[in-house]
Length: 381
Image (cartoon, rainbow, N blue to C red):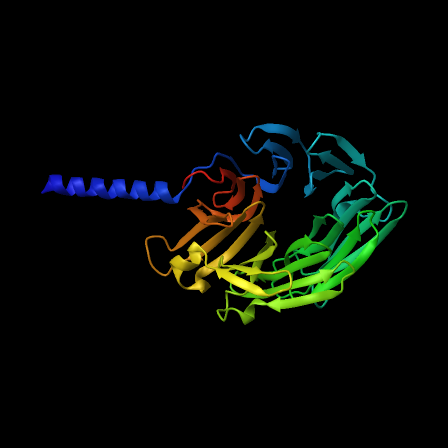
């Protein structure tokens, strides 16, 4: 009897090991106690205790190290670093280092980034305003011969964000406040103002094609309980609205219609909802099909999925946090990659707070444990 019990325990243990090895994937490489700044040109940029590390994505080797960095910001392949009184630009392609002067009127203590974009330099600051309703003022300075300032009013804790597209640059902000209005400024390649626009809820992602700016809106409140948004907008470069659709027309579930991100692929616009479902639209705003994610299929109840992060490259990837009503683990986290043919999903050790892609590599910043973990997409789960 004792022998059979030992054998049963052994089989159970073996089954558990096999289950975990299937569900979890080991990192190709990882760094602990670092935050993920961004990825570009085959490099991952991380920050640890004011030390910035530029790492080779394929093996994690340190290519460059900068100390005493207060804040770092990546725009394309140009990295902006703010030291005490100094703004440094680092080019990820050729490793060129340049120093920028801070223009008169720009508060260095409030500076988030300064970057030379060739035809002009772009700076951004942020400072809180404490009145009856607290908010942050995010100001962009577009500097050629002189500087022009554009200010955006954003919820506390918001952050400047810049999208690059072939015709120019889009200046907006990221926020955790799902119910704030979104706003953006459109600049041409020479820094000239092309237009400005606003959306009903905060902007969650951006895409561009043939003179049209596409936006999605959506997000969760700080507690992750309520989700708002679910709109897709198409604007002209001058900021005039072409069309607008809401996912509420296609899904009645409360959590189904908020949008985490957009991707243009094969002449179609793909929108990823907060359940991981993918909605496919043509460029005129007509929905063509809905693709259910493995997470949605497994949990059955969409309201169990929380805190999704989105990334896009030649593939889609989203990280999710789901809270199960039964099972051994009350809470689990994972990543799903969609290559426009099928899904590939695996579990992660901690909740993913940031997710990025670069040519088949999946780079995630995790919380508990605090680390940056890198997987090569396409290897088996």
